[in-house]
Length: 423
Image (cartoon, rainbow, N blue to C red; front, side, top):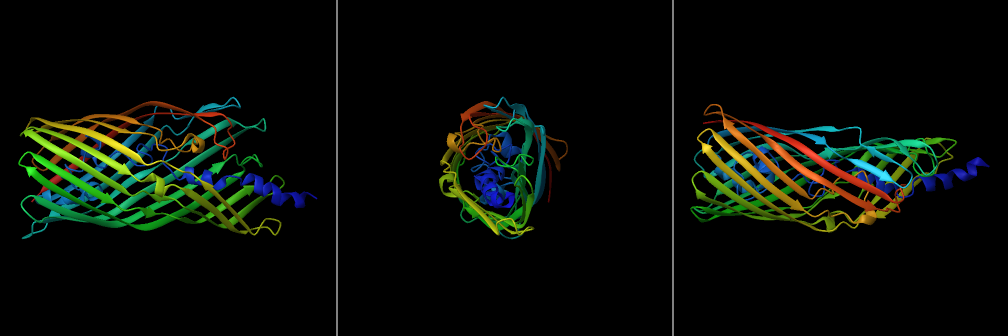
């Protein structure tokens, strides 16, 4: 008799699982949706206003046309430490819990050099596009017990870029590379019916592509533009377990389809009215509506004949397109020291009806400040802070077992970069 109810329990427990697993495939420290606001310390500390500025190896992932500015050889090793000041989930069952993982480390680096006897520069670099996750413990459930949910997700890029000064004023560039993503997550593993699921070790690798230009309108004014193509990222090769009450079923072939990094168009200006002052602006259109429409979770090859041979569940996410505005400033107070400041704004692209505590991409305002110090002609250290003030979203996602709920997020980043330049 119990066996007859197992398929029904399986269906209940997997209700909305595709939505859950998709939302978990997003970084808990997400900023512009699940994109970071910039890449490399200078880009980040100028609020992401980088498309017309890009002048170090991070240009590979911001605007490859900037590689044409490289003189000699340059290495940039960069990293970030995230402190979640308030990443919290509250719901109608009396829960109000902060994610237990309060710190997240990110890193990357790049090498670029000018190409002898050509007007070109080229480089290779690795970049964390997003990552981390939230671990929420001792959450009250609708069944009257307490349980946990968590997500660990990472998305990174490796790319090769080249930029060339094709005329005195115009530089063009392109980057090709690979995007890698992986995911592990669980929802109420000990509570069948409203959760009882776990996904592990699903991953995806796909090629990515970016093109860019920089054009000198005058000796002091530069226009920049970059286009990033959408990259579909089906996550495959995972395992999926499902608590059906009397028994937990294990599926050896799980995949999540429908996840993608979005198409982007960035336009910007860089103005250098004085030799020691640089002002920059960027507007970035992010095509979330095409990248994040719906997802499908499929799990096959169960370890029991009592389990359905295949589970499949689809869900619509319906994200909105996002327009991000960025302002940045760099000021050389002396030949060795540069000060940075920036501001970045992007409206939360997630509808309230599909919000979950697994995505902290509700942050909208980002304030940055920092400095670079040149220790020697070859070595420079850059460091600074990014602060995102608290945002609260009240929501009721029918696919999640939280009822009326609230997501809060407030974050502080420490960004740093060590650079070496030589001929």
